[in-house]
Length: 112
Ligand code: 5GP
Ligand code: ZN
Image (cartoon, rainbow, N blue to C red):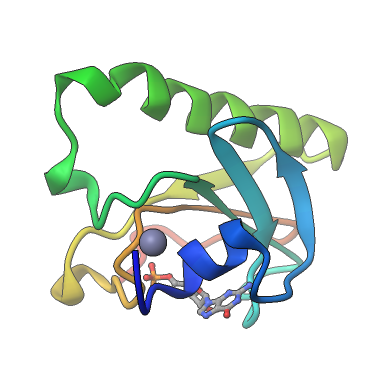
C-alpha cells in the first residue's frame, strides 16, 4: 500500500530494527518506545485495522499472537501486555494493523 510506513518497513525501503520475520508476519522495535520492551507485530499484508479483517484472516491473527508469545519468551519476559488500537479515538496513528508488545516494567491498568 502506497504511503504506508509499515508497508515500507515490510518492503525494507524503510530501515528499522527487525526482531522477527516469517512469510506473513514481521516484528520490529517501536521508534518511540513506551516501555523497556516495545515491539510492534504486524501482518506483511496491508490491513488497515482490526475492523477490516474477515473470517479468512483468523489464522493470520493467531500467527501474530504466536509471534508475540515467542518474542516474549526469547526476551525472557514473563509479564507483558499485548494491545491493539483500532481507530483514532483508541490511539491508532498508523493505519496498518499492529499489536504492541509491551513489557520490562510495571504496566498500569486501566490504561486511560
Ligand atoms: P498506534 O498509535 O497506531 O497504535 O501505534 C503506532 C506505533 O508506531 C507508535 O507506537 C509509533 O511510535 C510507532 N511508529 C511510528 N512510525 C514508526 C516508524 O517509522 N518506525 C517504527 N519502528 N515505529 C514507528
Ligand atoms: Zn501498510
